[in-house]
Image (cartoon, rainbow, N blue to C red; front, side, top):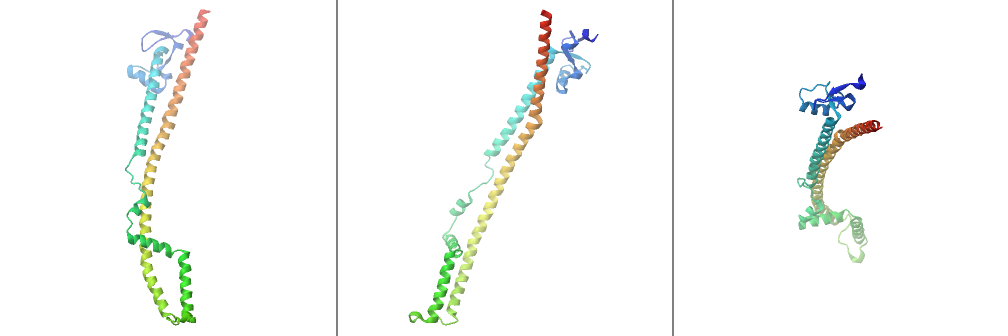
Length: 240
C-alpha cells in the first residue's frame, strides 16, 4: 500500500517512507537541476529524502539571494558613476557670458536695453514735439530748422543708422546665449536620460527577478515549515 511504501534516496541509498521526501519530478526546475548536477544519472522518477532535499533548497535560496545582490550592486555602481560623472559639460551660461563681455558688448546691451524701454519712447516723443514747437513757433527766438524739418529727418536717420547695428550686436549676443543654453539643456537631458535608463533597469530587475525570487523563497519557507510541523506531529503521536 502507498502508506507503507518505502523508496530509496538517490543521495545516501537508504530506504525512506514516501512521505519523508519527494520525487525529482515534484521539485522545482532549479532544485532538480542542482540534484542532477551532483548525480548526472538521476531521473525524474528518483526519490530524495527531506534531509538531503533541505540542503539543495537552502543552496538554491543562497544562489538566488547572491544573484540578486550581485545584480543590484552592479546596477547601483552604474547609477553612482552616472550621478558622479563629469563627462557632461554643464555650465553656468550667465557666468560664462559675463566673463567674456567686452566694453563694446556692454555698451551694445545697454543701448538695446534702453532703446526697447518706455523711457526711450517718452524721451524720443518729448524731443520730437519740442523740436517741432520750437522751430514752428520760434520760441526764445530760435528758428534753426524750418518746416518740413529737414534737419530733424537727418538726425532721426542718423540715430536709426547707428542704433540698428548696435541692436543687432546685442541680438547676436542673445543668440549666443540661446545657443549655449540649448547646448547646456542637451547635456542635462542626456545625463538625466542616462540616469533614468539605469533606474528603469533597476526597476525591471526588481519586478522580474527579486520579487519572484522573494516569493519563491517564501514558498520554500512555507514548505519547510509544513514538513517540520508534520514531523513534530508524528513525534507527538509516537510518544503518545
